[in-house]
Amino acid sequence: MARRILSALVLACSAGSVLAAPCTPPAPPPAEARPEKPKLPEKPACLDKKDGCPGWEAYSYNDAIKAYNAQAQVFRPLAEAYVQKLNAYVKASGEYAQCEVKALQQ
Image (tube, rainbow, N blue to C red; front, side, top):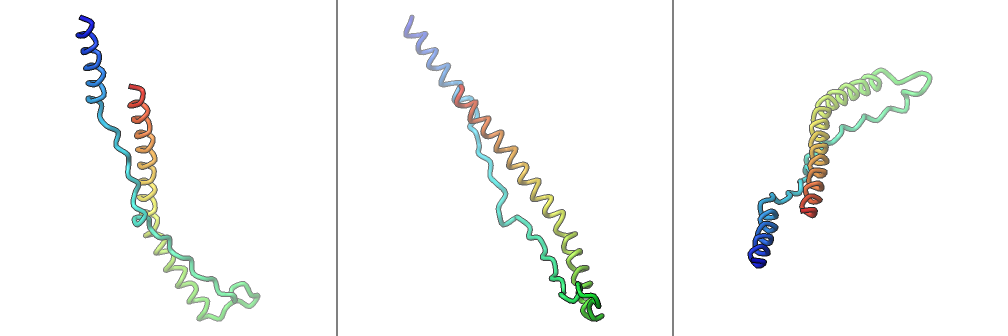
């Protein structure tokens, strides 16, 4: 009788661990998916002078700033999407840690 009870307990304990789903570690978003921030154009030295820049240099800098702003508009949603993936990874990491803790407690 004691042997049957012991067998039932061993079977019940092993069945509980077999039935529990294994914890799956999350995968971070690939570093290659991180968007590259556009580089701000270099400000010409003449811009800070009292007389300012000659027309062509001022126009050139203005065009470079416009191009930068266009690149920044493209960058922003890509960066936000990457941040969402990072936040999902952080959340999944916490859930994975809790799963591991529960597995140890069973």
